[in-house]
Amino acid sequence: MVAIKKSSRQSSNLEGEYTVNNHGSSNQDWILRAYRSLEPGNYLREFTSKNVRPDGRPFVSSRPVFIQTGVLNRNSYGSAMVTLGGSGSYDGNEDAAGMSGDMDVGGSCTRVIAGCTLLVGRPSASAPHHGDIDVSVSANPLSGPRFDLGGRESIDSSSLMIGSNNRDDVSSDHATIVQLAFDHNNLQSSDIERPPQPLDIKSIESYLRRNLRSSRYINPEELAILPGKAAWKVRITVHILNAEGNVTDATMLCICAALKDLKLPMVEMEEVEGTGSVVKIVPEGEDDEGMGFERLKLQAHRGSGRKRQSGKKLTLGPVPIPTTIAILPQGTNKSKVLVVDPTSFEEEMSHGNTVTVICNTKKEVVDFTKRGSESKLSLDEMKAVMELGMERAEKLECLLSSVAAS
Image 1 (cartoon, rainbow, N blue to C red):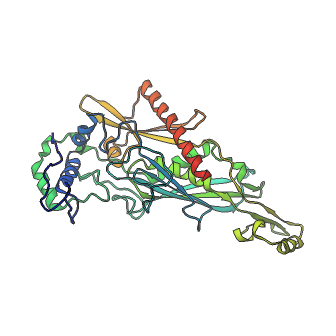
Image 2: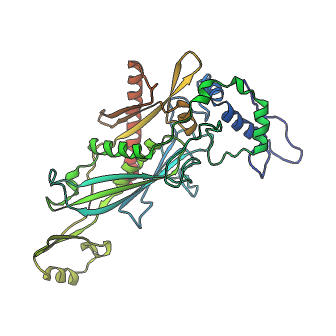
């Protein structure tokens, strides 16, 4: 066991108790990061044995949630950005809408952004009165240290340096010193032989698409323009700006917030001989609210076959709120610890064993998903997970409603 304490000595030429190092963090910080990288299991158990997590949160506490809407006004009809942890905004604005909670001591945050674009297409023959909705998720090397240019996350199983983020850089000299200081024989086999599970973007896309459609959050009949002839196809594009754990919850919340911000534009429908119905999106400056009386008379004079359908906000159902819980090993007696809203390090140490429950304010369980071969829960543990999901659904439903109203 390695015990690291804050030094009480102060430098003679500095007023505070912390020193400034232009090459990175203090010696104490890189020793902690190296200890976490070389012995991640022991590092985690140093905290969980005291009923606390490495970032200072209790097991059932989640990071503060910040939601901003209308962040992509130029190229989308509805957009949002969701941040888990951190300050919640790019410019350090502290009055961004958020859910109060203990600030992440480590400063790491998960941030995703989503935008809604629209297409006009022909509805399917099986559902002529329904529109469609599609979700795509993307990432790049700026999203996290292990993402490639194609958005795929790769894991080097031969490397022990796991649990690092974009800000944690350990020089080769320091790493060599720490490798000599620690005995690799003391590492537990589970920490070496079981590399962390990579983040599968395609499975996240499928998961979001399936639950968005099955949750009744959107009524597909509201996306119809001309039954059997034309309907809206809403394309929701989600980009992971920073992946520091629990990306699934962040993307689901971001999609729900973007749909609350979405407003369908006005469309113009005209019957053309030999072609059928032609549907055009009316630019915002040319809708009925922005047209003068003379232009409206000219529009009506063009023919009775042309008509317009005004733009509208969607009537949304109960928000499907996800709650992800990681299952961490605790000691050698096969006991486990359940932690809410896991960070990237906690997800790596869980080896992909997570549980996600989606609930709404109607006390309904929309979805319950287990991942990993060791994500077994007792009946009491499942009840506790659902209670946490219901409680989180109440809080975040209020947050989304206040953001949409502002």
